[in-house]
Image 1 (cartoon, rainbow, N blue to C red):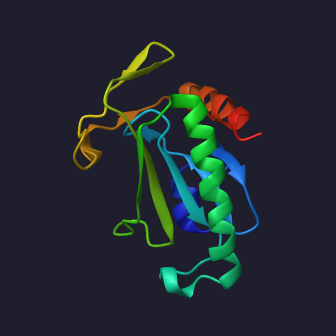
Image 2 (image 1 turned 30 degrees about the horizontal axis):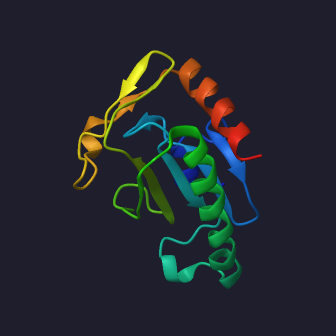
Image 3 (image 1 turned 60 degrees about the vertical axis):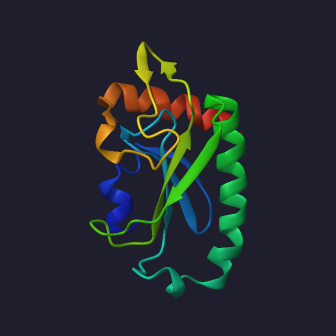
Length: 142
């Protein structure tokens, strides 16, 4: 796995692994269910991914949207390819909603709704919370 995937806590944050992509829980939750969709290969340019990764990305997006729809009933979803600090190809997946969601006694408001997500309002999870949320989300991926 590349350094970006490792920075986001792999393997402890792994929700689903495909041939070319991993879907990881984002340890700092911008909104409930925030994920990282990361290419397993080393390129730092989106255009450098193998053709097969682009085809599989469609499957990854379908899996993500189905699982998060069930888990947190998002109203919109944002895929942000930022790659400023973490260089390998990845997207931050942020489910969006107009009313706060609760999980495990924590309230997750979408501070930016209906505008751009406010990344600085992310709620960092403890190691135990990460494990619990990974297990719960993984079940929604089948």
